[in-house]
Each structure stands twice: as C-alpha cells, then as structure tokens.
Image (cartoon, rainbow, N blue to C red; front, side, top):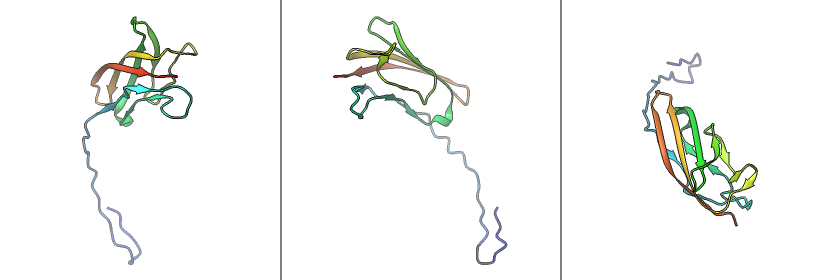
Length: 115
C-alpha cells in the first residue's frame, strides 16, 4: 500500500499477481538474407524472461551442423563460415531450459531465399 502525505492524492493499494502465461515460441519458417533490409535475419521470438538457457542448431540437408546460436537474442544472417548458404530448406533443433527447470525441444525447417 502506498500512502500519500498530500491530502490531494488518495492512498493506493495493489497486489502482486502471477499470470502464469504459458510458454510459446515463434520460429519463422522462411527468411530472405539478401541485404534488402526486410527479413534479412532469422530471429526467434518468445517471452525471454522465462528462459534459463537456449541453444539452436541449424543443419544442412546432409545433417551437418552449419551454425549454433547460444543466446535467445542471437540472430542468424544465413551464413556459414562467413559465406551465404544456398537457398533451400535447413532443418533446426532448439533446446530450451525454462526458469522452472523444464526442458523443451523444438524441431522444424527454415526455408532460405537469398536472391
């Protein structure tokens, strides 16, 4: 409760409430790293405050790892060893440990168009 010493302002009371918002992850299925300023970076979106650890591995069509992101804030520019990867489909795997110590694994594909 916050109380005012000025009679012109009323006292205010508040309670803390845990909303228990379910964890959701948004991974784009396509991006275009062609330096036009639109969709040039792959960015994962989620409620970052619920994440304790994050790892995203992206693979080529043969299953070779081409990049690994270790921070949820990391963005991928569509390059491997400094070179643009060819357009195509790239499998990924994301491992996330939440602040409640549960681990979630996500798998999918990202399509890259880089004309």
